[in-house]
Image 1: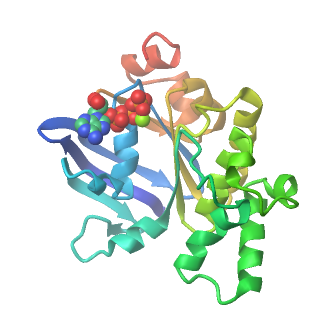
Image 2 (image 1 turned 120 degrees about the horizontal axis):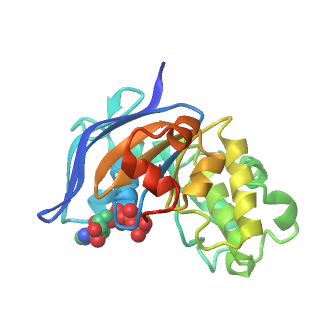
Length: 253
Ligand SMILES: Nc1ncnc2c1ncn2[C@@H]1O[C@H](COP(=O)(O)OP(=O)(O)OP(=O)(O)O)[C@@H](O)[C@H]1O
Ligand SMILES: [Mg+2]
């Protein structure tokens, strides 16, 4: 089996505080992989270690391997731009560029990265990304309006379109529905199920029900340690660890 990501003995510190402790797991391609666990257990840190976003924090230190297609993103010979391009990232609070138009929010990345040769190609790419994010029909007549005019759920789908326009392999989502109402949340969940046909999706959630609903594989993190990882159906019905069982029935977290 070829893996989308392979993590080996990953450790992260903020200053001298040991945050992630010897984490190892593999993520198969074209699935939804959920990372669940209580607040503060290190979920966001784990996502940021994957695409080397942690390096924006000068106090963060990383040890261990994160491999994409067999290549360790922390190898000295690896170009960080290449690493970042493998990933799209979506955050808890929808963060489109509020003053830019809907169109420009999606078009900016491909333009800056030279992914298109002309306006026609750019138009096509923007349209395709908005279609993939299930947003095109709702915004096709408002492409010039500022992104801040969209609803929260639409803004989050715009952020997904913006990520997709850069043609990543893996999409990292950090609690993407935490700030959305149930209807907007279920649209994002449906969209994720569609996107896994072509991408590998890693979603952080502290909502175990969401993990159970949409993920194929799940990892349970507790105080910086990986307690359990496996197929979601197994982890939820026959957890191997007592802590996992307590978490999925809502006794902790
Ligand atoms: N920039 C930072 N500097 C120092 N400590 C940090 C920093 N960011 C996070 N931490 C600490 O690292 C630990 C893990 O934080 P992280 O944000 O990864 O947790 P989380 O599981 O995503 O939590 P939540 O569910 O609340 O988002 C926490 O104890 C947190 O206080
Ligand atoms: Mg977090």
